[in-house]
Length: 228
Length: 299
Image 1 (spheres, rainbow over the protein chains, first blue to last red):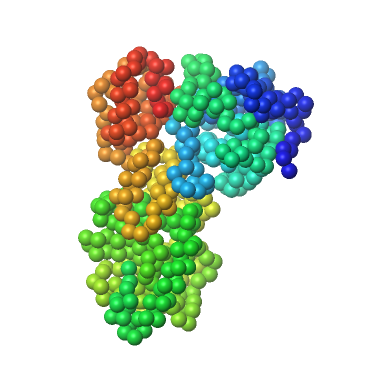
Image 2: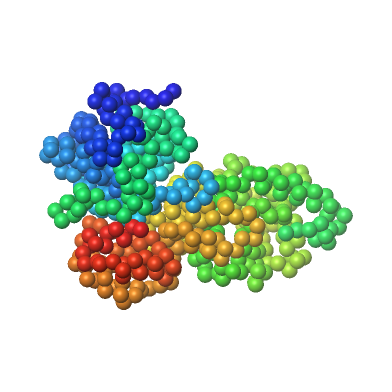
């Protein structure tokens, strides 16, 4: 079947996705490409918000914060929206022999005050495959908040990821989900990455080398907003 | 574990027939016992419960698909000669007399007879996932097993995440076992997945609680409650020197908070080799601000 593009994936978006897949794209350009995809999502989100005056919580992982996350935030804040940023540092590992046992505990988190009291929550991830990280972070957020709209945003999804994610939540929560993505792939590489996905291991593509490397990193956007 | 000799001692010439029945029963059970199964979820619950009951971890053993009549999970406390036997059923209907021979009722009766003969204190339970089945089994429990067989309702789930959300029994035990006060779901899910992963990686034959815990302690973070209540003076001084940084020791883990925007838990248990190495790395660095400390908080 290969890659299927969503209607929202215009020429510009497709060329950005191609750039992610291209192994020759250096990490700086890769990060800029993620930022531009974030801008594209920002415009889509403006159309989707149930209440145009609402405040929004945007939750992301540490590796996505400065690029995909900032790309969305810049568009939304540019239109006068108030964003509460939440960043999670997840350590993903599998303590067993089965993929269904994979976990991604949150070992560090950053929250801007007010993040619990919003009607719209956006959770972003550069790629969603088995949805372990998104499920973990979303579960964490809805334990302490009650948004009426939850936008799940990723440039690329693996076929079946939505079903996997929805298997982990109750109907009352699933009703609030809306998915924004540009492409859906249906296979993985031998190493387990979505193929073509976002061109392999996002940590390496962004220059973090490894999971441990990205977890030692503090995004610039966190440093900027911490003392705001 | 039952032998032909022990069966013959209790059942006389019928012993051989029972032995052949147990060979077949055991073979069927083993082939269907990997991964995210109802039986394994129940075992994780019992492991967590044993930890919370402060039973000597070297004296309690877990086995699955044991060669006996009630065989899905057997928990043995050797010093006290207490044995807990569980038949675990994730099915939509069940009768005590489900077969003319070797029915569920017969299995419990026979298991009890063998234990009494061998001087073991047996605690026998039939664990079912379905509440309607549970109610039916309670209402129809035969008189000859009424006093020594308990029926337990343990809610099933399609995943560990759902199990922890929907099954109050396991959630409660995991919360007690977890180092952190009011643990978030990701911590409970991690703890449960580690217990399940460790259990599933053993041969499930006489695995002590100590062995399970030792294997869990090799995984970071495991979030299993520890005993340290304080950190070293030197580490405390580093933390206190940073304006806005606060810490708490919870269940042997160091939890930190900076200005109510940043928070986390150091993934190594206080006192572990990994924690000491982490602490040593801090002493060797120049830490004057939170930004200096940040790279060490998630290592």
